Image 1 (spheres, rainbow, N blue to C red):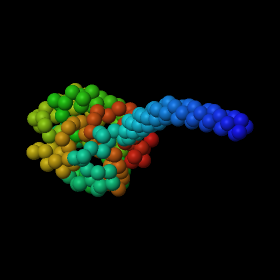
Image 2: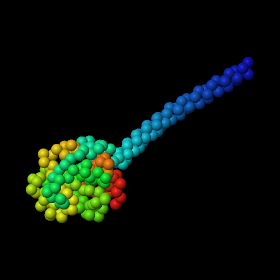
Image 3: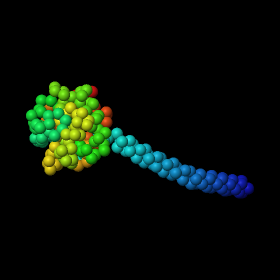
Length: 218
C-alpha cells in the first residue's frame, strides 16, 4: 500500500514537472515567433528597397529621352525628302534637296538664332564639320524657320560657317520631322534612314554616338 502511494506521488511530481516544461516551451515559442516575424518583415522591407534601387539604376542607364523623343521621327524611318533654299553659310542663293545627298550620311540640325543652346552648339558643330565632315564624309545642314530669313546670312558670316543654313518658310519641314523644342538634330545614313535623334544641345558624347550610328567614327 505504501509502495502504491509512493508511486502515485512520484507520478504526480513527474506530471507537474512535465507541465512546467510544457509551459516553458510554450513561453519560449511565444517569445521566439515575434522575433522571426520581425526578421521576416525586415527582410521584406530590405528586399523592396533593393528592388526600388535596382529600378532607379536601370532607369538611369536607359538612353536619354532626348535621344528618341515622342514627337520626332522614329529611328529606322526613312527621312522625308525636302528642298529648301540656302540663306546662310555655304551655297547662299542655291537650294538643297535631301534625296540628292543620298550616298553619304547627312546631319540635319534644327536651330534658331533666338535659342541660347543653339548659339552654344553652332560653333561646336562648325568645329566638328571642319575636322570630320565635307565631301565623301557627311553633309551638315542647319534648318531655321523661327528667324527672319534676312538674319540667316549675317548669322552664318558671324560664325564663319562652312555648312549650309536653310530657311524653312512656314515650318513645314520642322512639322514633318516632328520638331518642337530646339535644337533637334537628326543623323541620317547614306541610304536616307534615320539612325539617331537628339532633342538637346549636342555634346561630344552624343555627337560621337550620332555619327557612329551613321558609320562615322570621330
